[in-house]
Image (spheres, rainbow, N blue to C red):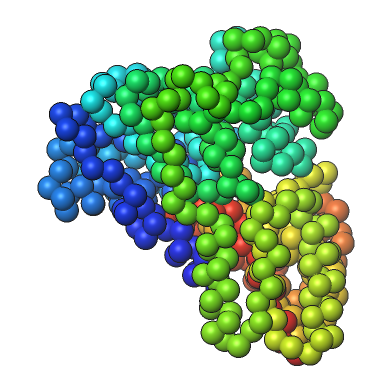
Length: 416
């Protein structure tokens, strides 16, 4: 089911039919960012080569370290994720410069996917990159949801919140996006560099207050400066910008559901936009699984979205692994139930390495095997150390970069 969900959202499958015809007397300037950016670049140049139009396209995309692929026409560079690095800053400035250089007869083609917020990172005047980097780390550990994190990042950025589209104007701009956010909101995907932003500087300040984050003076000043407000829907600078969603979590869950139904399971999809603290959601889902088991039928419970972890311990892990560990605690060895929780991009939390685990498996004998090794799920949850727990049991999911990103995938199989 996990493989089917990932395949449904792979750029080779979902992108080519959306690519535009080269404009008369102009060219296609390709700009891209995200965990799917390299595969999107590959699919793009393959199509234009097949059409004999390779000389009409040029550009570059930025993806996470370790996620690059070989290309010939569209350059692929790598940068830091989830915490931006110097490569993220350079990529953002380069994208802005190329957008400004587009002529009135050109099409600026933006290939956008989850991860772009970190991979295009150009701070506003007066904010040091190191200060923005440190703030990103604080927000990631605080348990802030993706729309809250991106609200802050947009108002500290030169490229987010519609500002890339403004740089390209008056050239035609087309964004083709793969959604990794609950609700598939274009203003949240990649922090909305090519669309209007309904959030405000006051909203960004409120997010920091909600999580008890006292920013350094330069951040506070930037979030109070009207010059750093984002473009709003209806702005004249967005008049020539178009936006198409080419893959989303809901379609990937349906692909997984088809697999389950073919195996004789009744499918319950809890939604593709779930949010909340990973361990808490896991306990709720464990209760649903127990109830389904008591009903005596074969059921597959699927869900997507983006869960969060409020980091209080010193362990390693990510939202999907912590969810899986929460299931272990909630199921306490109940037979007839198995689960998988993994990030569709191939990396769940971790240190930003391409070989980080994607998630973890929970099997009917997980509790017994953990007990035999004196591994107590509650202790590992207290330390936010889900990676170590599942590593000890050999139950981590390792798949490497999938070249797409439609966020969390969670499946619980109940088979009496």
